Length: 142
Image (cartoon, rainbow, N blue to C red; front, side):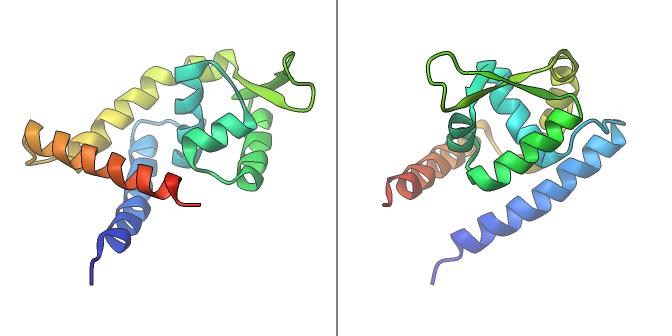
């Protein structure tokens, strides 16, 4: 029996708690780790539909909608009209969220150094390539 799925699940849970601890240590209270995943997607693309955010984060649309509503109340995102498709809404970062990217990157670098402690660059590259392969396998599964 293989334990990869179980180990990934544990890493996800513990990593999420550690990330939130690091946010607290850096006095970043504007968002939590789960919201950081959404912000990260938007920092990279500037504007995305809810469907696009769901695809890039792996979050279910139902969970994502409630998270985005909370983030809108926190003045982190705003909803704007999608001129290409009136049936969908685009999500855009606010100025407040744009100004938090540097702090997010600081915490992200700290958690990465925890994850990869005692790894060689070759091990990191191999590990991440294997994770990408698992991700593609999961996404390809109908």
